[in-house]
Image (cartoon, rainbow, N blue to C red; front, side, top):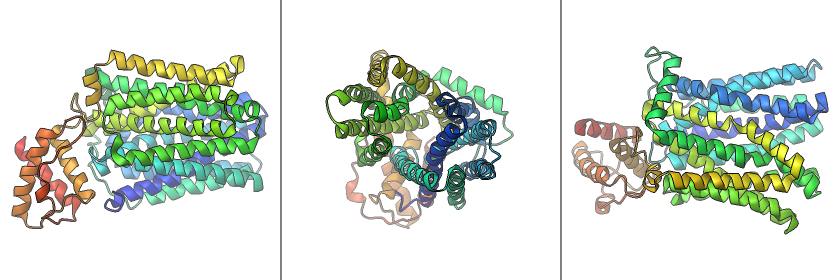
Amino acid sequence: MLRLLPDLRYLGAGTLLSSIGMMGEAVVLGWLALELTDSPFLVGAAMGARALPLFFVGVPAGVIADRLPRQRLLAATGAGQALTTGAMGVLVLTGAVSLAQLILLTFVAGILRGLEHAARQSYAHDVVGAAGLVSGLAILGVAMRAGWLLGSLGAGAIIARYGSGHAYLFVAAAYLAGAVAMLPARAVAPAAPSGSDSIWQGITSFVNAVNRDRMLLVLMMLTAGAEVLGFAHQALLPSLARDVLHTGPEGLGALNAARSVGGILALLASMRGFTAGGGALFVAVLMSFGGSLIALGVAPYVVGFVGVALLVLLANAAGALADLFAQSLLQLRVPAHLRGHAGGAWVVAIGLAPLGQIQMGALASLFGVSAALGASGLGLVALAGATALLVRSGTMTRMRDGSDGPGPSTSEMARDIVVALVQSGKIHLDPDARKQGEWLGNLFKALHQKIVVEGAIELLVEDQLKNFNLDDLRQLRELLDAEIAARS
């Protein structure tokens, strides 16, 4: 897929570089806030200023992502974050920094990050199509987690050797490089007309879509639950390392490395195609996520450090898959003109992260780290179990392909699946237009009938697949668009 889609390569490179900046910023932000205040509470306030904007800007960010060229929006938000972090670096190096400045610039960067997240998901959908969305988002997830690993290690090393000011400049350089990486990317799908309605009307249109298709609300609820009850466990890793395992900074670094490795391994495995199954599998992954947190709470008293690190790896593998399902199912649930809105809905859900961090910290302070991990894990298992009981199993399986609700039509899915087959090298088309039209018509008819069969496609024309040769995927998409129009 990367070899055949240059825009996906640009998006992957931009994601890797901006993720280096994102995690590097988190590291230096916490360290600088602690240096300025010597107060864990104020460090938490600074970290909250980084995450809080996501909840409020999510839906407006989605509307903007549907109005403007998404690849240009990604470049602009990267440049904006480079500007805010670069300004922080200069303030630190000149000795003029204050906590108020730190929180203000961090808050502005959080707003830009919300726009970036919404645009990134919808642009990925544009580039790879509905059929390739899970694999495309998995590729971006691997790039993101690799960037997190490099960013945390790089920022930590620079802080230790040169100080927080130089670390902020390193972060700014990473953000700027991510923006530059997006400059050659093309607008794959046209943006919505900017003058068609106001941003407020765009917001209300998404609210109306949620009212018409309550499964969108279920997906947002599950995404928020994974963030509040699942991913918030990361806030307890410092206490787990220092107070429970008694390992110090080296142990914390190993646990954070296990987080990244777990996510990368799970996403690489997802590219092998085992993720067919949609909403039901999403719920099962959430249950596994919760179960692994329960085991993590018990592990320090049963196994040694290596066993705990392995459970951190497994928990974050489940978390990475949950994140992948949340993003892809939300994207597949909406029509093409609301893809940015779906990305914004995901941003709103993850914007509840501070609530999870607060409840995790409070539980750990009152009852201990193990009790906090166990309680959150039980909560996530209960949420997933209740969802499985309340939502009809047939509806849950259809969440994979958008066949129930306002998602992509079977015609659109058939088009994207043929494109994905060409990208994977399974289909080669003859340059002869007559042969293309005849063969594509037959294939399209077969796909249209078989598009929603337990999330899989059964092709009955394999004897024809080796007789054609066409490299231009855009031309193929145009041919299939014409076929869709002729049949509508």
